[in-house]
Amino acid sequence: MEIKVLGPGCPKCKQAEKVVREAVAESGVTADVEKVTDVMKIAGYGVFGTPAVIVDGQVKCVGKIPSKADVKAWIGKTS
Image (tube, rainbow, N blue to C red):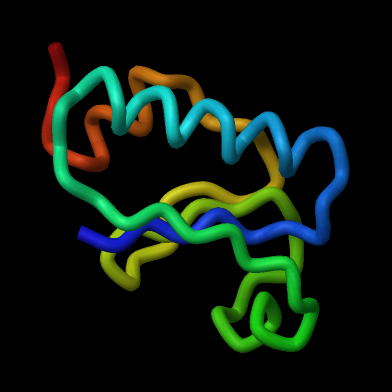
C-alpha cells in the first residue's frame, strides 16, 4: 500500500502527515507513507488544496486534516 501526504510543509500539512503515520502504525498495516512537498508534483495529482492524502493512487482527502478513523477506513482497518 502506498500513501502520499501532499503539502508544502505548512502546520496543517505536518499534522496531516502525523495523523496518517499514527493511523498506519496503530492499524498494523504495511504501507509506505511518503510526504510530497513539490508543488508541481502536487498539481500533477490534480490537487489544488493542501493538505491532501492519496491512498494507492486515489485522492481521499483535500484541504483538511483527516481524522485517524478516516485514515483507518481508507486503509481497510476500522478498529
